[in-house]
Image (cartoon, rainbow, N blue to C red; front, side, top):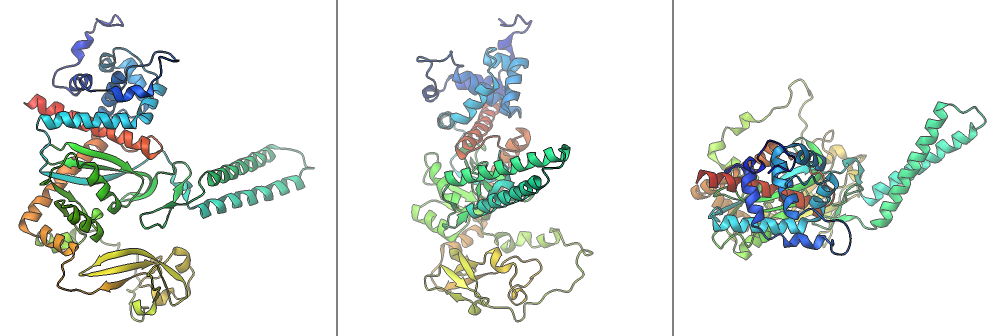
Length: 497
């Protein structure tokens, strides 16, 4: 019976074979006790909404591209399908937002239970897992990123400008007040307030974030766990959502969000996270972003079967011999200057490398920092060095150091530390394996396995940005979208059967 006395059979709205019907019955069969610890209604407060109802509402909303908590509240009040699946509960948007943002561990428990159900029904083949990530902006401003030194300089500049404006304002205090005077006063207050906020943030965060090589990583004052990520459409402030997808039916067996743009440092943690889902013969595939000699060595030590591409793989493949003609060419009208030559440029021998190889000194006497160790350069192992922008920006020797001094920002070089020998590196072994006929056939399945998953989540489910702050919360939201994808796959496969 309809609780609103509408001439609608709400139970009939959950049509067998649809996502809503599958979601309704699947969630009712799960153990949701992990959500109970969040509630203390026996001691105080009003009766809480059932976690099962909230989970159904959120997952159904995400399946239809409704991401905001206000949009979910509106759907629960106006959409007959949502009224049916929630029992006309009408949760407030703050309740929905709290449920999504605070219950990441409980959501992870549900994700694992759904994988168990899918595994028992034979939907996880465990023959091949494809790993990839998608970079999405989050609820953070990239203009508030920097190191502690950057933030301190910003605060000092704001205080200095505010003081100058205040002195000028007091000097003209005898003049009659007008609208411009009020605007100046408001601007002084705004700059003073922002400077105080920066100082408070610096006090709460006494250390810079550290990267994988202990180098300072830029912090962010709106979400310090997010990161600046380079994409094909520019730089964004956000997170990298990583998914491990099974090749049999494109089921996501592991989903996690990370505040870093370095895919190399994510490979091993992601493989460890999906250890319960794979077996000894499961093949792991990943693109060149996850390739490094250290990663390949670690995989070999653990006995993990893997195909990790390198950035020269397509150039070695005769099937892509004509790919150069399809690449974009520079505008012929943009630059008419002649090509620069590299004759007379400083070579590796002109740089002085420290004994511990932690840094190097350039001919101008400035320091270059180590940017990579045990790097594969052809058939050699090398240590890489890179100069900071401040060292090269105004250097008088740029023309003698850089091939393109007008466009190249900094100098970098690689110091070979091991010559080619009969000892095969892990990079060479992987290269030989992936270039074989079997390797190409196996790796060729990676793209068709993982990329459609991201297309479904980003385009069909309209996840174009994370709406939360903090890695813990964003990770929970990413797992919810992975749940939607898996349940949708389960519903379609059951209908087809």
